[in-house]
Image (tube, rainbow, N blue to C red; front, side, top):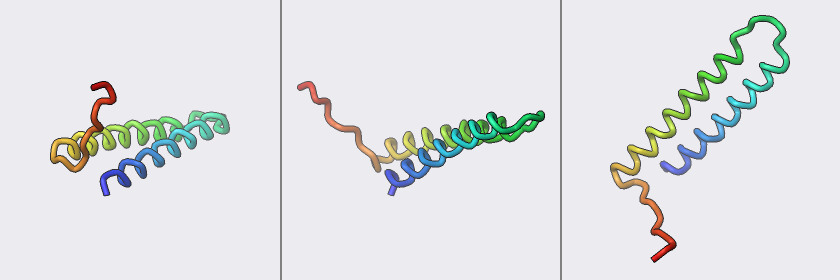
Length: 69
């Protein structure tokens, strides 16, 4: 369940980046839509990192073994 949450967050982050690019290219006046989209992206990135750290702390996600052994 945690993996799907992180994947969904990453997809929303990419969508937010795309919308910020679209707003930056199309808006000609002093619109704050680009700033709002990038603020949302940063907030979602912090949330994704927090979810990963919490999942690793509780053992819901475990790192892979090192390929060098």
